[in-house]
Image (cartoon, rainbow, N blue to C red; front, side, top):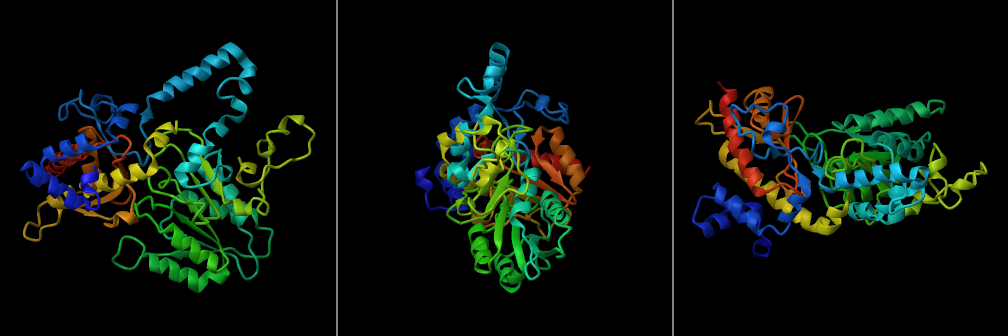
Length: 450
């Protein structure tokens, strides 16, 4: 898509419409963009459910044989075609070699995660030794906070944003519980959005850090806010925290595989993420954790275990802990390596921009037609402040709209009190998916008003 380099999504869509001699909202524009998309073949590497296979679908209002409109990669990524092959290979190895599978074969189980640590490091902008694949997201949050939150009489606050995902709040409270025997009372300082606004201003976050920083032990923010889809300026937040002597960490559950991350270069102290959303590992997939290598000899895990022991001496069983330095002491990505995060991000900006363009074109509030259904976008309009997700608010009851979309084979998700999250993922979603969604949304809105 080099011919559109430097253009905004709106300019691109309108230029294609002019080139084809059709309205920018035409399905022809989506089809043209799909044909020009160099990442289009990646879609074939995933299994896309048919409408009839989705439990809430209603074939009286939707074609059951058609591919569903899958816009919920922010919650669970599609299954890669290779997943079944890899699982069957390991099951066969277990059946045929038994215990020897721990140490033999192309993917020995005893250190299986080591085979893909470099690919994961590339996705989050880290060195290989800074990344570990282990546990689940909440467990990793607990472990990291227990090690980085070291309160003193003068520095004992944890800085959060007001609507952080519950895991972030749970983990900070766990850190407090773990340290209950200390004489310091942990305080949570919350950054809130300004009245009448839906997202946080970067300058407000930085101002709080500047004012309160000398009493803040840890700044703990999401990379992307799960509800609004806002992508935070992680580099600026990290730099501001470090100027005041704070540790800075990020929950990158919605950022890993979605936004361009440079955790090492930004000097982020720690981060963690799950792998079942944009990284498509499936339910139960191992989570990831990052600790900057500047801490490898100074930050130690609060809870240690056998899998944190150096792999070269782990089986000597001498009960002397030979702890691996850095994050390893805490302990299916080929498609990303093939595409490259930079190329995926370029497509994502255009794909989500196309979705935004069509929503604003068809569903902007018209004061002259107060009964007409309209949609508001909570996510920032600046592509540099969002990933692929748009969070939508409706003038119709959200539960009814969501129900009508599901009947028609749309997979997205609803978050209380009033948001529908729609995430066109560049790995497998097409511009035609977006166009179909907009058409289906119109039918859902009409049905929800009847």
